[in-house]
Image 1: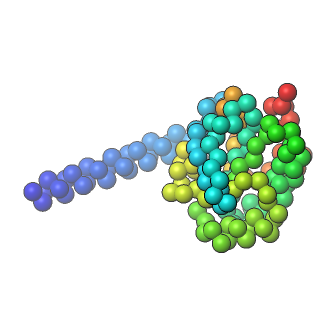
Image 2 (image 1 turned 90 degrees about the horizontal axis):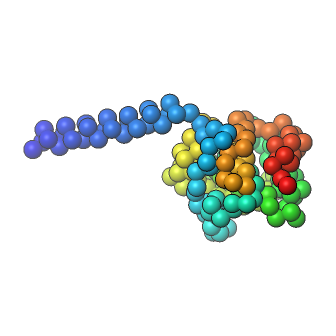
Image 3 (image 1 turned 135 degrees about the vertical axis):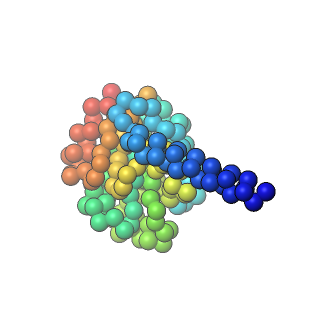
Length: 169
């Protein structure tokens, strides 16, 4: 009986390792692919389901308070959010990656970030997008397709606007 349990456990371990290896070799979600749906529960307790924003452009930013390269783009992302806010057809969502809530909330306050942000509980969202690190930003078009993938920080507010403006009517 012990041998059966041991071999069964070893088989499960190999299965999980194989799945992880296949997933890592797939690479990131790419331009033109359907954006994986997810639910983000914000730090304020509000729920955001990506599929509810079809017809809008969604800017999905993965960040962390411990990420030094996330900091320069935080104010630019907030400025872009404020720029498009009154339109109602550009949605910004921030996903806090592998962080603690007190540090994440301090980061949001320090950089004046007001668009919805929440933790990536159990790293489900980052796994769905196959995020390799932070910051990473996915811009999703009105049809739910990945229109742009930004690995690393945006360099300026203008850089962000140049990626979003062509997607708007």
